[in-house]
Structures are given as structure tokens and as C-alpha cells.
Image (cartoon, rainbow, N blue to C red; front, side, top):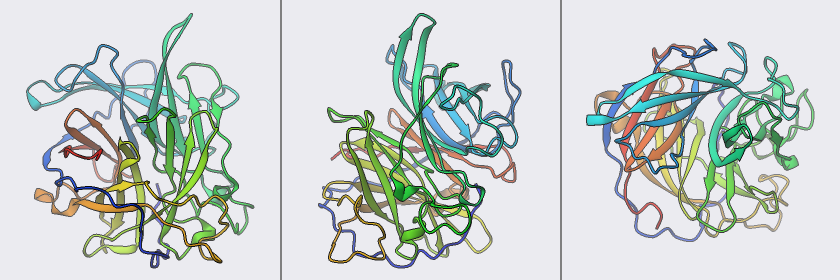
Length: 371
């Protein structure tokens, strides 16, 4: 993902949603591990620029100390290989993981075809369900593409059963779609679309939430990113406002960006933000947020023109500044996040291999996140 500077500005309002209860303690550093760069199976495709990690549910109820599998997704716009999702098998016996090579599967569009070069930019993936069919068991997933306004590529969210069948492409609210290729006045800014994705399964109606990486064109200067909240069946669609920051010490606030979201309880999420130091190094911050009391922004065309509206934005609390982790282990462009058992896992986008092999950062998962 290309980093571009925008003016984040000051948030329109103090984020004043309903107060979150007692705050969890900060996560603690566990270790850093290197993910495989080699493929196994039929496709020998590059593994740079990983932007997502999602542990694959084990129907037998597997835990971290047993064999586990997870998906990873590169965000190279199909430039090095078709848009794809990779599966890695792992064992964590004794605390030291062993990883298999990456088994790749090409993603499919709404016509059942592999994506052409520069037509999609995968960024996040989450598991939805297991499907039983005549051909066996398959996984239903949800994944996002951040889009690229300059190239005329709109952001997108796809629901797919991980076989040769066509995916379901979700209809997005017009606020997220750029209105024209040349000098758009609405929609995503550059390639700062849906970088993140979370599934709230704690209530009767499952809901997907996807935040844009930086404020939309019509919201520039507010420092507020819109979050699309949609029930899986499409019966309910909302938009929330997520205020960026505060930025870690010595980083440029204008480079703040939402990298990932993870549901940890009913209307409770962890959000990963990134910001850049003067030398270009990235520093992440981990926030605990609640959508309780947040206003629906669906009818607000621009956050720069509220009229008489006084929306409440998502409330957030800082859990961890990654620059405080020992031995600079927290410095890097971490973009993917998931949890398993009592651990949090963060995968690094190594920017075309500039950061060397891809790192997997592991922290403890604080208790009380769902309160």
C-alpha cells in the first residue's frame, strides 16, 4: 500500500459516545516470528505485502497449542500474481511456532473469474461460515478491496465461498464511491479505502464493519474516517465516524491511518492505527473502541457541512503505543490483526520486501475487552 500524506486536522467534535467501562490493561509483548516466503502446492506466487491475517476456525475446537491454520492476503493489486488468499499451517508446541509454506487460492469476482491486474486491491479478510455441499466443505469468507481512485477502481466488499463459484459483491453506499475518475469530489481518497474488516457475531444479527483508511474526499480536514456497518444479509446499513489519533510521539499526525479492526465483544473492537516517523518508519497504535451511542452518518453528505447535526463519533481509548515495545520490535508497517486464545497476532506489510521477510508480532490479549 502506498502511503500518502493528507491533512487529518482536528476532529469535529470530542468523541463523546457512551462511556466504555473499566479499561483493560495494555497487552504485553510475547515474541516476533518470521512467516514463510515460499509457496507449496500448485501456485508459486510471491508473498510480499501481507495486509491481513485470519485464523481458520477448527470445527473440533482446536486451540493455540494444537495445529492451527490461518489465512493471509497480499495487497499488491494483482501486479505480482492474481489477487489471492494464502493458507499457512502452524504448530505452536512449546511456544515456538513452526510454519508450513503458503498454499495459494486465487480470489474470484462476481462473475466467477480471476481478477485482472490492477482491478482490485485486497486488504482484509474475515471468516463467515462453513458450507457443506456435494463437493465437500468450503469456507465462506468476507474480504475487502480498498480501491484506487486515480485508476478508477472503486472500493469493494466481496462475500465468497472459496471455490470456483462467483462471489457476491456488496452494494456500497454512495458516500464511499468516487463520483468520477478525474478530480473526484466524493468517495475514497487515493487508495485509502477499506483497509480493515471486523465481524460482530455477539448479537442475533451478525454485522460487518469496515473502516476507510483515511477520511473520504468530502470529509477531508476533519480527521474522521467513516466506518461502514452492515448486517451480513444487507437488511441494516449504518455509517459511523471514527476520529483518528492521537498520533504516537514524533510521528506526523497527517499520516495517521486505520489499518485493521477486530471485534472483541458486542459493539467492542480493537483498532490498529499507523503513523509515520520523519524517516518513514511506521509506528502502530492499538485502541479499544465502542460503537455504543455513535450516530449514524448515512444522511450526512459531508462532515465539513453538518448544518444543525451534532453527531456523536465512536469513543476510543489507547491501549498500546507500539514504539514502547522492547528492542524496537513494534516498529514496522503492521496491517493485519487477529486473536486466538489469549494472544493477539499482527502481520506486517513488508512493502515489496523492503523490510525483509514478513514478521508476525504476538502480544498478550488483555482480559475484559468485551465489557
